[in-house]
Length: 587
Image 1 (cartoon, rainbow, N blue to C red):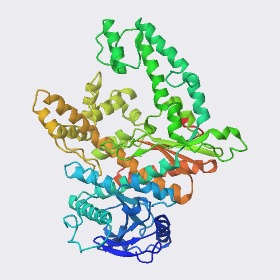
Image 2: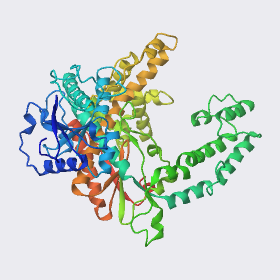
Image 3: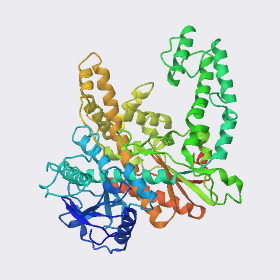
Image 4: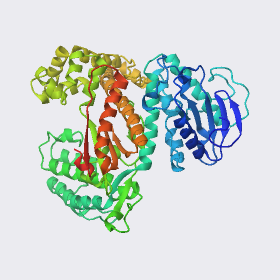
């Protein structure tokens, strides 16, 4: 790294050279720009050793950032990184971060953008589970003097211990990825790390949000904002209806008191979940349902929520138009791979559970549009792909997979949907058992794929997604339960989880690749900003004149994601973009 990205001193580390920079953000920006200017030599991906460097910077937590060149791997090599699916510049660096969720935001704050990275924390979770164990609490904490984490015995070094551990962990993960000999694993690690960059960038960008509209929606639903400790007026009226239905005072927010009231009425109600109360004949049931729906909006997405999670009020032009003064950005914190299947979660803000009651407040800024797109029947289409069921793959050519399959699965769209969902989730209620039998007869390869995953899970075995994400191994407590009187329940529960794991996990992988490709196109073409992601749905905020182009780019990225994962397999996963002014109009 001599002479690249800024001035500073260098020192050797086992994985390459280290350069210290007073301004890491400037160095990162310079290195990224140089990589984009360098012509494609076409042969850099065949070198034997990776050219890597680590960087430290004053006061920016960049002491845990390293630079990994893509030329350390051969395309097609078992366990290779295979991450160039989202990048046009083979010389572009891949920045090695201990934890992108922690280390990337300071770089974004300083104006630096990473094209791609390797997130060691996320990679360690994937690799540890591939190996049948749980990841350590801290990833880059190996002993730099032990030598056991290096591909070769390290030379003595004098340098920051954290950087030594960082490179040791990186080298160790490269070795283990290759040793796993799983063709899709390198792509999964790259896609997961790309997701970490997307998550940090979306949190910084934020979702365009109109607090004035939000306040109006809450007033219409709940009444004016109440004093602290009080319910909104309309919500209090709903609470009073619950009390009247039971005939005595109680707090409708208290599960204990509500259960006691049902028991006093002679009803054997075990819990207050909606599916439990659906069969209960009592006037309080409907009142309680409506109250809790409204109460959730107030407590989880009401005025206090907006105070905490919507910031940067005042859109451009607010001085001339007071109506724009309420504009801000909703900035949730995303958790990449928050679920075992790889699905994302949130660590605050509740972005993945936004109720329809407040979605109108997510509004494009003046002169801009929201382009929202969701995948149609993503999981059933992916079941067709991972099972190789030719009849089911052929059916994915249709826009509506359920309608296409209906003649072979009960004759009605609704029955086809029940058959597929029951096969993937292990449902047996109602007509499900009979419809699943039809699934077994008409689409045997698809049925066998999920059924085999269930049987493996019931025995405590491990199953994997298309790219290799591995279900967590059962713990000691599960094995103990398996040998007890509750053994059947434990086995069935795990089998139901592994049955769906292979499908939902592959859906998460497809979405990660989609995000990586879409992020690249939006940035390189200057079309707009990726502002929201929910499992199989993306939202882009863009200038109105770019909206139609963005819709086409989203569709192309979806097709490219499918081809990236499944090659020439003729499976189709359509994404349906819609240009709207508010998120409530998207669907």
